[in-house]
Length: 207
Image (cartoon, rainbow, N blue to C red; front, side, top):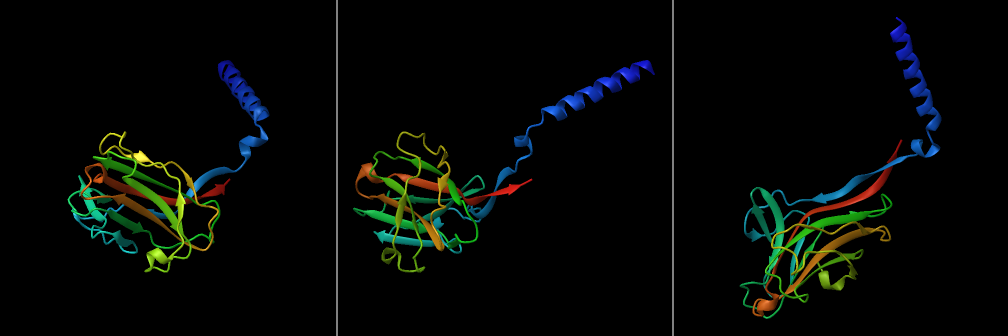
């Protein structure tokens, strides 16, 4: 009994000490993220023209379009100028519309990978528009958003995270797009880009 009383006394002292050390910041709201939009192309088949529902697959220059690919059960979107036989290939992959007025603090992240990139001119760009009408791609106003992507210095097929990209300044209905620039005849510009794991999210606070 004496041992138990000693143990209980020590236990009570520890609890009291911890309670007295609790700061106001310890009870502040804990921040986490809620997903607004996600696409991992999990329904992709291998080596066919990409037709994921809601997405626009548009070839601005040349006949080559984005393709859907799958490797070891993982689907992703891919564009390459290799084998097109065309001097210039510019292809857009445009997302469904996202309502930016429902939440605040929206952000986007995604992953990219490369194969046979040799030049910075063989580029993959992220753009956004709030006046794209769903069909006239070049008539819309597009804003180029700085984003980290795979480069020719990245190991082949190594997944590179874009990091957190802020979209919170945009209002209304937003589309984001990936634009590939390359060539089917210039060997320095025939590289391949792969895009996957796209997530648009916003911060949500809970107690």
